Length: 468
Image (cartoon, rainbow, N blue to C red; front, side, top):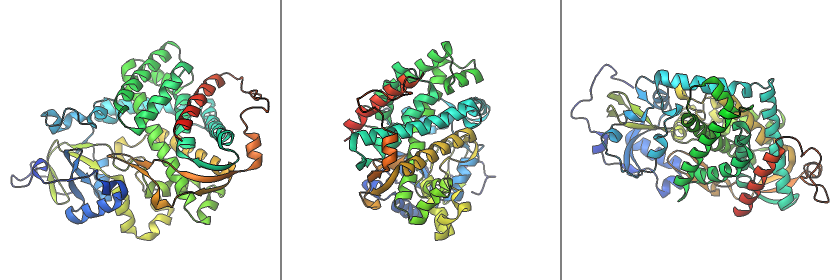
């Protein structure tokens, strides 16, 4: 970036809204987003004007410029009130992406307001991040237990050998179970949360009403935990900020749940894909305790959030070949930045542990995912991936990697499904069997909290059957 000393863009420089823009979300983007990024880079340089569902935005493509946008909070704001087109009523009233940005919570705050909200999150998450604390130990044990239970359900539904979708039957339900546990949802809210988050994360005609219902559910959860605090994230957020309203806490929990499920869930699937399509060396690295490096490699090749949340220019500035004006919206593309990073470093960068840690899967700068949340997310991914290869003696993709269907949108690019042919370890299948031979619950299922888990598992069983 240059010309920071200039207060305003030259009058002759074209405005974003006056430029002819190419729509980003096309069939070409669905099948080959990397090719679209390359074409835009060739045509425009590190920053390109594109149309996003009918609204012009700047798409930031190169790694250096993406880092500048993410790190320079004085030039790039997160508060949607900086968006000139919104303030001037130039957005379509039913523009589908605006509703999410109108949910005012920590992600869309700046400066002291953002720091205060971030401090609340960090303080509330700290007990769960510490593996030596009772809360941290129990959460880690729960993630492993839930993974085992989902493998047991797979064995009960499909046998010890067969076919499975590790998205619908493993990764996504696992993250929903962890959300229910971490946030402290009571039994009566568990099924509603799972069903509406499922619809919300998938999108579709019911995604708007599902989002409203989910927000209402998280607000009810805040009210419930204010009256009946427990050992969960919701209660710890109330302890960290007793003055937060139930409505605001509901918004914070809602966005955390979206990110926990979509970002972490995508990381699980992308890491599993990286192992399944990798060489024997990649698989053996799991046995050597190098899951973290495999996660980094997967995040570099397929970042869980392809295009990061909007930033708004605080004043006129020059970037790449264009002048960007105050109030313009920019989308920093992590996927395009990674493509640029790998091209700069040539092919060796993907095999370098130092280089793979440069991925933007958790964001960067003041609004990057808090360290406590990153460590929790990494633990969940490592546990989920590790348990699959602990229990499966065989797992092979049933489609070539280049034929796997992806969910491609303005923000997230994630696998719609991850179909595999599997074979369970016989000892694992017996040990994880969820019911006794006569249909009785096995010993230990009467513990406090297991009733909630059975309710969650019942909902997941219905979802798994519907998804077939």
